Image 1: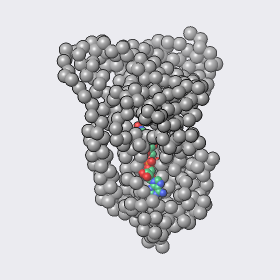
Image 2: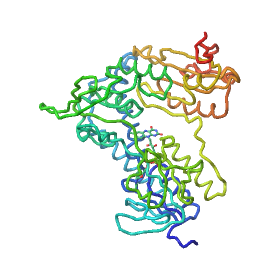
Image 3: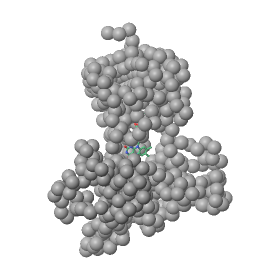
Image 4: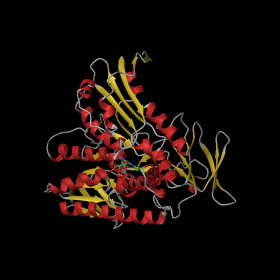
Length: 463
Ligand code: FAD
């Protein structure tokens, strides 16, 4: 028994915080976890989960259209936004309840309050004005949507937070940003019948993804009717006399829309957290600086998840939490492994990806082989939908290892999860070649691309 109120105090009840608190409590540690908004955090309450529900909602329009080619006559269809919001809210409340119960059952104390550090071992609970102490502290406060405060009229805009609660579905929306959140919401709103424009300062959307995925998705989105404006930014947003908003861009365009959504990145959530008081160092972006074991410069204070600005994804925050438990409570120092993280963009079509893009691989290795297939998926034949699937394997010519796998098309996220296992196991192209295909599937293309489409040597495409 220590002299502290708790063995472990976790600030933030999101993906990383909940997992670490629950596991530590289930091991008999005296654990408290503070959450200022809703347990479950960004992912459950206003991130991955409600977003994916919205993605499903936005796909039905195409399903109804596609059905005709298969002989179905679908009656008149109508979408009701309040019904979707109510159903989504009910599901999120259910999940929040599960998170709360999981913590309670493990024996953790749930504190519905903002918590700030007031000393190296001291935490102030703002709701009760009580101060408590803990031997070990985890900062798992996540990130916040960048409000772009320097943009005149930013207060008229929404971020992803509000997008989940808009009272009325807008007729038109302008989304600023080229990252996965911007792209996913552009597809969601378009699928729900909203006139959608995406504006991004870069030359192509999704800057860190493979170029074929970026260009392929761009084309698919434009073909659907989403407007994409590149190399331009919004400089001012004002209210239009006729109602709605008007955005003026740097290139001189004027874009009118009912809503303007800013999806311009996420900042580590450390403002006002008392980190200076506790002596915890942050970097230039305000992210908590940690070592390989998620330990801050104050040895008994750890930080994990988005607040550390390593890889901002839910499974990563959870993995870091589990590594914390191994390191601190199981005497088994375990550094989170951030290599080869499979991930998806839930655009329409989806992107699933793991490993290096062609550009990254060609910069890293002397010679790479690129296996690329572009084809019309079987389902699109009878539906008549003009859509293409792209699959790409990047292989290091020196040892035949598959160093990147990228898919654009239906269920790409599901496929990426399984490819993630293979690449993590160090699979070679020869392993792909001797794997029997599952027929008829789209994924079989991955094991039937026997000849490289081209090679890249010294950064130059050679054949
Ligand atoms: P969070 O889940 O953000 O939790 C932090 C919690 O701390 C919050 O609940 C916050 O209220 C609380 N908090 C903050 N400060 C305090 C304080 N001082 N006191 C008490 N509580 C505090 N990731 C994926 O892997 N796949 C996806 O498809 C995906 N989609 C996303 C879509 C959107 C729109 C967004 C915004 C994010 C998405 N993410 C996705 C990212 C994912 O949500 C985050 O990576 C993940 O939630 C990070 O977990 P975390 O524990 O670090 O922080």
